[in-house]
Length: 247
Ligand SMILES: Nc1ncnc2c1ncn2[C@@H]1O[C@H](COP(=O)(O)OP(=O)(O)OP(=O)(O)O)[C@@H](O)[C@H]1O
Ligand SMILES: [Mg+2]
Image (cartoon, rainbow, N blue to C red; front, top):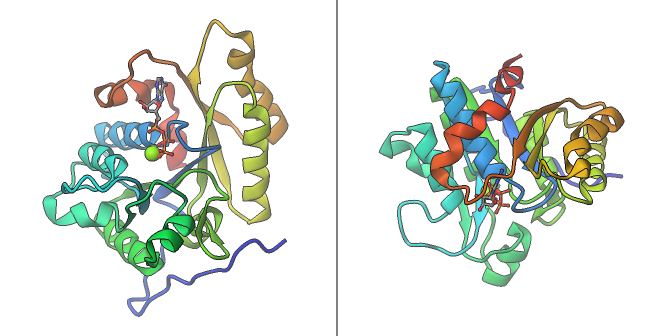
């Protein structure tokens, strides 16, 4: 099944994005913890002396009319410690409607400029050692007609890290996501189980069953943290084997 078209990001500079030096954080759904994980990984790598930065290439939602229209981009930029001239690179495409980008582009009659994404990614990549890219929703979210998040991951030539919410239904959602990545030729570098309720035997065991069945390592198991806020992000990193992303 050919689910999407391919967009080339080669340009005149002879730039090659390569597969090292970055990871694409996707998820089984919206609201599973991608932003939290993206910012936590950036923070942890930076604390280890690696010049890591994050990016939210495409965001949709309410335009807050501040420097970062997207809240996700603001959180990611905060932990990336970017200079103000780099702020525009964090979120090159924003559509002011909370919806899949393709849907938002139709309703708003606004094009999704993928080339802007590749240019911003390239510029960040030239300046920094490691880029952590947060996706939007899950892997089959349409960005443009016949162009899905999966296609973006493939075109950026990044391995995928899947964030899954540890509640009932997650085995199905996570295995489907892994399967879709495999079919598209996207490497899945790991899975992170998030929001685990440790009083639930089902939630505690979901990660090991997913790892066994998918043959993809679970590289993080993050508990549910009551009243979790942006300032808790550095604390989250200790639940993630972020060192495995560098190998
Ligand atoms: N381990 C956790 N414990 C408690 N709350 C959490 C946890 N992880 C994430 N959350 C909360 O869940 C919400 C969604 O998290 P987050 O914004 O990171 O998800 P997302 O996958 O990036 O969502 P989106 O698809 O909108 O980008 C946030 O309010 C966040 O604070
Ligand atoms: Mg997010």
